Picture 1: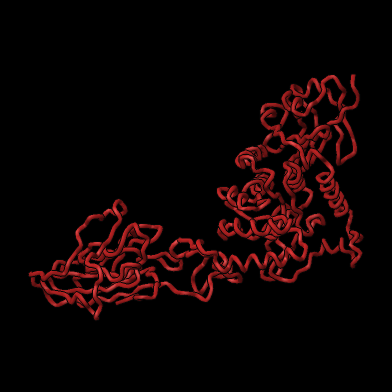
Picture 2 (picture 1 turned 45 degrees about the vertical axis):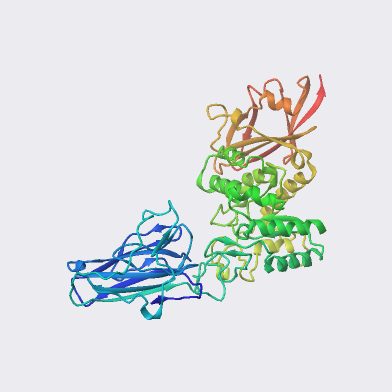
Length: 545
């Protein structure tokens, strides 16, 4: 017998050998969780998995070779919930199908044709006569008759020996935070974090939420403790790796008592709405807008692909938190990204101004921190390490020996800091950004017009009399001379009086241009965009005609 009995440990893999007769071999296949029946293995090869926490549910074993018909191979399994099943033989399935029951132990015997086996081998009695129990429709061998060990009458030669060993589930002292259930996680696993018990049996994929798990109460206690310190909110790392049922329960309790902002790091758009419904205020827009902007900046993806990105959110735009830097991503000023903070400003501007949702600045971003060099365990990867005590030399110039006034900035840092200052104040002061609507202008400015959707992106934000035209050039080497068309329906939505004279005021450069409002939908607004240029233009009524 190999495996366990009564310890609730799954078999994850098996190796089987025969010896004593060179003309007899063996092959076997297992039905594995998530994968189904695996390809046949033979003569000591592993069938199953290691390190994936996948249970075996059934097995088929048969002899091979010139003398295979001179012997029978019998086997039976210990199946979860059923105990020891009846004996199967010669390639018939043993185990279960359709019930998600793990195999826990196995016995294998080879006898000469016609030889009877001990049905209670090693003192173990089968509690179920059937060797294979299948839910109808779940297996290609459903309804096969249970094999039995009745006395065959065919004579055979000397019996070969069979040896076998199984890979049994291990119970490490802890599971890593990224769901690795082995005692020796790799260097790339989250070995410095531990998986808590939120009421999920990960080996079987079952949940136990009927009685609130103890971990839920403990986490509620932790959240209440920090809320009692008058914090503003929480940013939850990898929220999707904790069941949404817990978040719905705990956030319902927290929001009854405290006014805190809850932000979830989550990378699965299919779960966005569920986690928002559970009580999160905002979600990371990483796999959407950040990845799109990164690809535009680094890999020359088309600028008009931004349109497709916001459309797939299906109205959740205002619930997404935008950013161009965080502890997981490379600094935009690093050699691994752009190597120049100014080249990233078009992406920063789009990220900050497209929607009403929050925008995040990472520590040192406004100082042009570039994470140059190796940072301890993090290495030279363009990120400021979160694993070590490290310095941020460029950001320290703003700290200026405790004055915190930017007194150590060089000329370029002062220019960069001023841009971020204006951008963030615009977000705070502009009703169009904080409360207004969004209008994507890309449909009105195709490639065959005086526009370049490969590198240029344009949109409107508006609320009452606050109307903004935002145009950026992602080309970091060439100017773009464009004419941005504003369709008549956009003018109507913004309540633009065509009988008035209008100007466009450049918010960041303190200059203005006259606009013929009667021609913007046909001839467009002429703009010269420098490499990596950003134009934020306020459409203002100059006087009524």
